[in-house]
Amino acid sequence: VRAAGRPALPQAVSLAADIARAAAARKALVVLVSLEGCPYCRLVRESYLLGLHAAGQPVVQVEMGRSLPLVDAQGRAATHEQLVRRLGVGGAPTVLFLGQGGIELAARIEGVPLPDFYGAYLDQRIEAANRAMAA
Image (cartoon, rainbow, N blue to C red; front, side, top):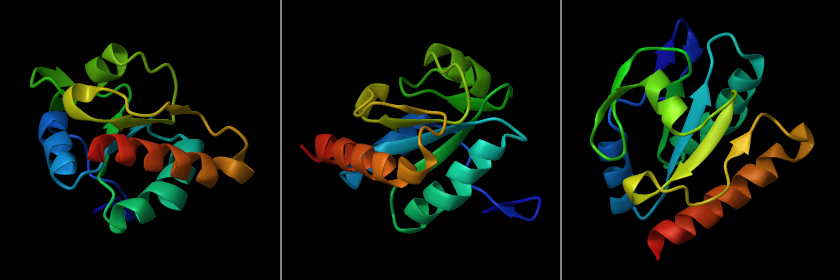
């Protein structure tokens, strides 16, 4: 998927359905909470999450500050911004690792702490979340 000529992740439309598909593959759903124009969001999306998505890890993007409709993890109608508020996300980028019912299976990553180690932090969290989902 490409948006305005740049690589993009799938936009969340139904977290409930995305989590169910991820669970069928015994994987967690990785959710990038992004903000339009955020250079760190672009870095995380393009340098880390697009490759993981291409390799088969379920990944979707939620847009902070946007009223795009979606179905949350419990099957309720919401918007991207309402979901961001419900999840208590305070800044972008934030990466979440969700399992059944929207339970966070690993600690979220807020911002880009220590960019040299970001990939390692991300890999550790995805591994832990996928292990929890497969159990």
